[in-house]
Length: 268
Image 1: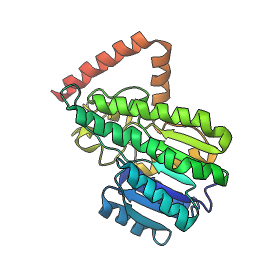
Image 2: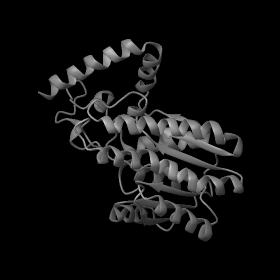
Image 3: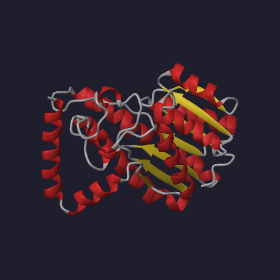
Image 4: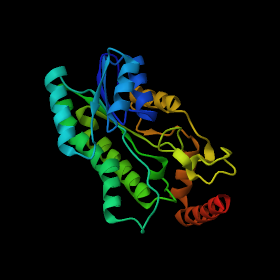
């Protein structure tokens, strides 16, 4: 897809990957980027960083009506969205100990937000001759997240939705990419990065192959959009792990159990 002259929306744009992506989209020629985030101040900071070719929106991606209203307004005011980067997310440790509502909220943000965005923008994109969806998932959506059941499950679902959209809408001019990084230096990484920062001793699963800067991840996203490449793996090691999982599931499960034990040991 040619990004030049396009209108883009980026959710979770108040910091991290979302902020870097909004900036890179403008650098790549987007005529305007709408920076949306639950953190209104963060969204405004990103828009101000970009300048006249950006605006800020307070948006709760778990609110279906809010997404629909934003899309309808941009359709009316700016002629329709060309690129929708559904990027918002958060971390929450735990598993069976968590309340169902905590699992449900993570599904709202990591899955239903992508679905609501697709429902809202795809009809207009198809009518105008095409468009692009960039959905942020995680390497956890291809592998798993040892310390968070709802994160692993919701990110798997996000990858599955992106696959389904890519299969069923490509012939109608809709491009789809799904972003699956490991550790990126964002607010989500937080205290999980480990005190030492040494990947060999860190107790953070995602940081074992290094922590990437958001700008590097954003560059990979821009390249994927231009090339219309589905799977974005900023950490190239993930492709090998995913292949190992597919080729011998039992061996992979046993390996993940050993990995879990090693992380627990480093944590203690």
